[in-house]
Length: 269
Image 1 (cartoon, rainbow, N blue to C red):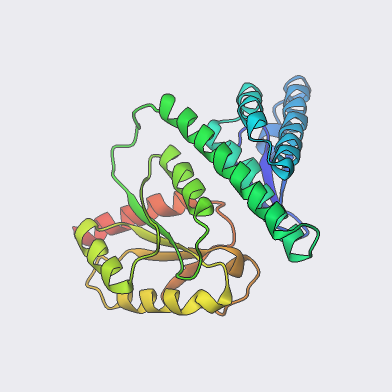
Image 2 (cartoon, rainbow, N blue to C red):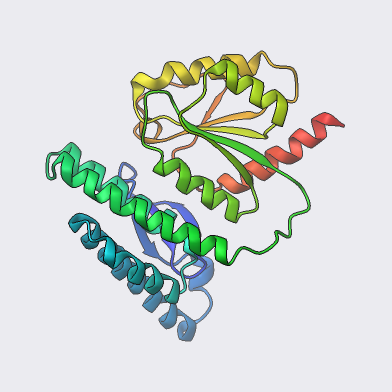
């Protein structure tokens, strides 16, 4: 289970049970140490986040698109950054709905209706992010490619991750559908990203990742890092793939990417 700090709005790693990939909203140790007066306010914020997640869950199950704008604005008024509505609230709900479908608690139609609702929330949040975008204070440029493994047509997770990385001043290029390994290698040679991020949903899609890993390993330096996440990685459904770095959560991902950018720069000197 992922712990999300309701005050500083950052992921704080995992807590038991480690086989659950939903999110609990609490406070990290650094924020908790700020004193009881401030703590009371922050606990109220934690309760509001749970309320927001509940509202989105109920509206999504009904497919109530008309309710989405008010809930998004309520979340922003509660102090949540627009992009974190997606990562800290919507992404765990998508996982929960997936589990409910897997154990036959909901139908395929229910799952599609909820996904459509989340797509609508994504577009609302994307507009919010664009309307308040400010110039980045970062002086270095870092670029990552994002895609699903071949065989996975659900792109919402990749688009959410892309928007979240952009909020951290990381440039992204999304590929929908995923390119052939040959085309991907041409794009890498031309644009020189620091990392290639692939979402691996099913074990049956691992051959695409393995092929990409081999092709990148044969490239001249500097080579981008290949970072692989997704359902199959979280549930340890595939063995390690040579040349690929597995990440079960996005905790620390932005720091990792910026460190890769520094390492790439050093290689080029």
